[in-house]
Image (cartoon, rainbow, N blue to C red; front, side, top):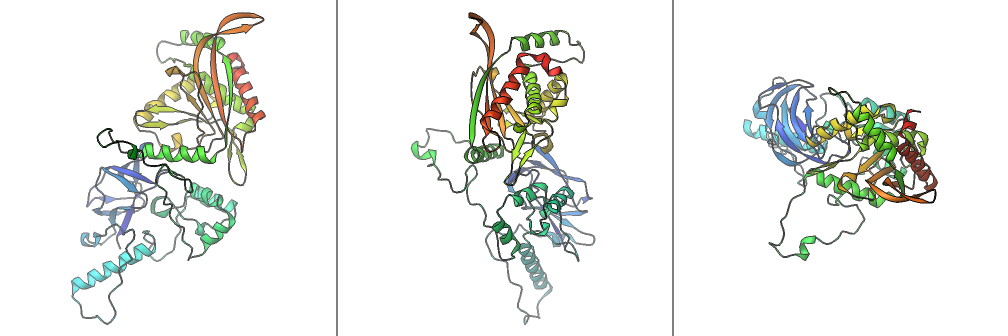
Length: 451
């Protein structure tokens, strides 16, 4: 029986994507691990690998198609001995009921009618199994090893979890989402008759929150240019609206004197080798200072879940990168263990790959903290929205000369204002203040980063 190749979920937050380019054509033989297509998600362009082996019988979704939903059939894979004529499998309808097979009494039919009836049965079976072709002669459950381990540790029957990965594969995010459900929802999921109602809220909205009127109602046709949302803008709108609505933000602001940091940066850059050297930025010092402050105040280096607070062992710092088409936050992992030159090179590489849409999910998913720096635009002070699963984000303003009072005398000093946005479920006010004190100490005395 032909196997439908479904649009994969290449990240936990992916709901749809663009099928940018096919790397195979109809009739090609493929094996497990072979590259099939390039999929453009809301963050990057990624390659999609084959899970099974066989021959491409039909390409359903042509390359360049946007808004392809996750788990929508995009091609048909033929097994050994199957003919191309059997590959005429169309995407399952969204609302129409499955066709009923021909009544048993109609036994005198032509070969074409028998084939048509078989296709109807197969279509009904595919819809009954939610579009996932069952394995021949088995009821194998597809799940990643990590997902199985997390389910076992939490004593969850993995068969009750709905998978969002390729071909319905259960991934880590599915287990975590199931854990976050209340007990009555979990019990309902075990009942075959209980079907979760799809979320009808449009992209960029939160269920249960009243929607604002469409802005087009206030303007005349022809007075504006309409630019359709791309997948990245939809994702940004949905995630940040959800974060701002559901996370109890509060803000702490502090001024840091940067004369010592600027002097240290100038000395280090001047002594860098001409070939294969480095060029440190103020932001590199800020990332390192954040990492060390998180180690000193580990309560901020945490994430919220419904059952527990996750205290992270390493400072994985996301660095916000502005793109022409949106915003992305690639991560410097284990920043507390890296020197300034290593952080500088990694941030530069991540930013270049982000602008070329070449980042992989492991480059930007997760992390424990984030830094958003608008100082290069002359912004003196601002507040940033927390990026889940983080519990805090640091907004960095411009460094500038200001008049300060020291020992009763007014003098000029280079100052920088930073604002910490905190999730009050995780970080209390005094804890956030201790983090900013530690951060300021590292900024004002860069040599302390060596201790």
